[in-house]
Image 1 (tube, rainbow, N blue to C red):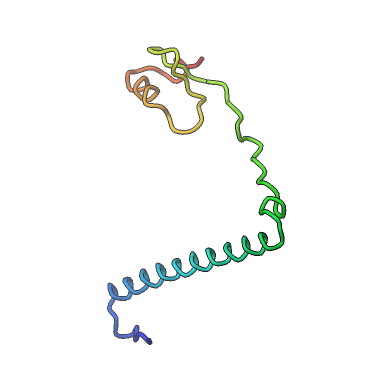
Image 2 (image 1 turned 135 degrees about the vertical axis):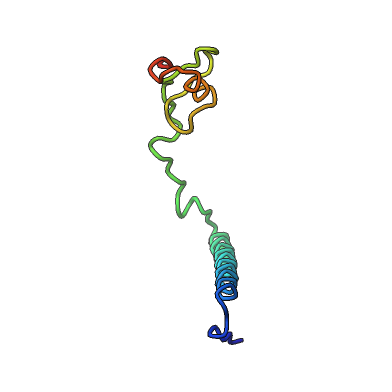
Length: 106
């Protein structure tokens, strides 16, 4: 099935590109799935597990580390924030109310 791209307008060409990329992604996923099945079948036939051959994944050095709170909600002392990640709603509300970041430090 040959497509004559010289006769396509801009919108038709963009649509063709989108469909082709989508199909390419589907084919890749199918190929990966089949490869995983082959690997698991081979491991099972040899009497091994995936973990026997490849080991378990090593956790990152930071995984599970709790960071001490840096800020505390003056209205509710149980609500704290380490200063990492998205600001909590209470923190933003306090700033809008005229408080400074240094006022909220633990």
